[in-house]
Length: 230
Image 1 (cartoon, helix red, strand yellow):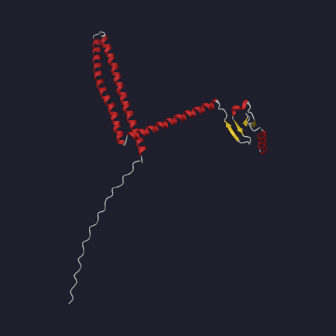
Image 2: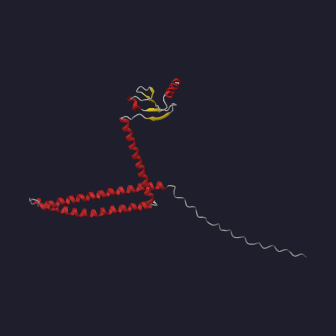
Image 3: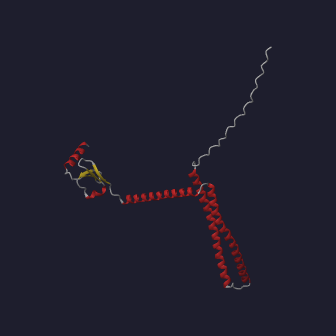
């Protein structure tokens, strides 16, 4: 080992001042030194040495296709995680800046639920109306069938239109009910996160200082009378 080190220093010292010395490893794991790197080892990484044998520059081996793909995928995951962390930070900041208490979050939730609930009520009224129309058309259709007469085309077309409208209204109610469930879940999560963010930030109010009431002074004792001398 000492001999290799001596030979390396001697080889480097023998080079002109401007010459470069490189160290590389071949496919069998053997280390080589020289002023140029063979083309077949150019992509396997190498180390540039100074005249005194000190490392001047180090070039890593070129990545294989699999290594490059893994590297790209790893960097993509890091970017996704960084974006997620940034989104959480923004949501937390907005949550703290928007609400000052859990009660305010409940009030905001109720306002959103009422808006969706109003649409549901209005739609349910329209559903009853359309259902009544559909029942009327079906009754007429049954009457024509009882008399072995064909259903007029305008009645058949109207009945299909009412059925489509009724289905649309029913889908709207389901959508708004799902929206209400999502609203409740969202605001419940916001309230839980708000509780975590504000935990321990509210300082406990000190107990009010009650001034001490001085005890009533004891009545002054009258001195006992001194008996007169005879």
